[in-house]
Length: 379
Image 1 (cartoon, one colour):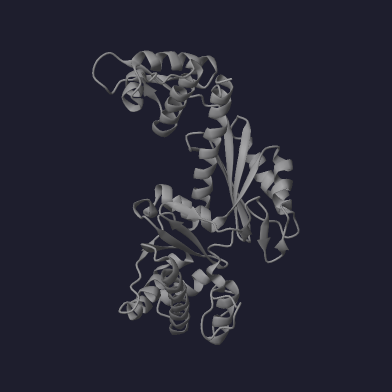
Image 2 (cartoon, helix red, strand yellow; image 1 turned 45 degrees about the vertical axis):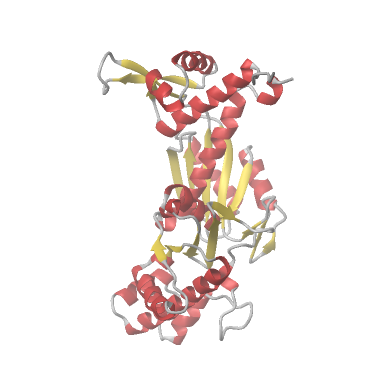
């Protein structure tokens, strides 16, 4: 006769506690009845677990629900000082920092250009410290989105070469908490996957044009980083008549295109595209060439991965660029149909992705500390 499945009561309370904490993080303040409905737990189980969570200062009263019919019922929410995580987006010019709580809500924000001769780690530490003056709570972890190839252990390889993890280690020491480093375009793709246009797609490639061109690749709902973090480095895909290893699109390329078309090479990509949208013939010629190059990159990716769509982000989503891409894609359509859609988050996509990853990691960290571990309970 088979024995019924059974487990330690501490394990059951851990599973139930995590279900309630995750529900409160996702939905916000709820009554006990609402938690019963959302989690599928019995009212007795919800009451017992809430008592445990209240004693651990994991949840706190959050007012009264006066919207539902019947007697007013008290609501509970995650404790407002459970902890904080920082999300950071670093580009070639500035750092943008937000502090998030376990629900993912932004509690503080700072953005500032890097000083001309300053250290970027010190600059980020100063921005995070300024945010922490606004809101109380321990800083548990930091997620940083940065241009360049990021290895599995957090090392960065960019124009200055590999850093051997120096940036990550220095930032962790400066802030006194764990730091996770991620490629900025990958974070933009994660933002689209979890809360944007990509949530409805089985696979897609996000093409982000900023200082350079990068791709974030999602296959069957999972971000693909590659064995050594190189996946998505599409700026160097071969294109005729460019020599092997030459960048396809980015600031340096646009400067050369501007010189060749009689425009100011010091203008930004968006300024050239604005001029193209306004009808400037030389800028239109530049936009046409940029659109051709970006479309050929998408075609190369499509022939290998066949994604459902390409999501355009950053300057790639500029209306003048969209028109240029659409025109060239129409020429390719009989041989290689390509679908392009616009990012849900624009230039803030990497920061949105970093904030989402930071909130998720914060919940895992805080909830593990609050709840008894199943490995210990089974000993």
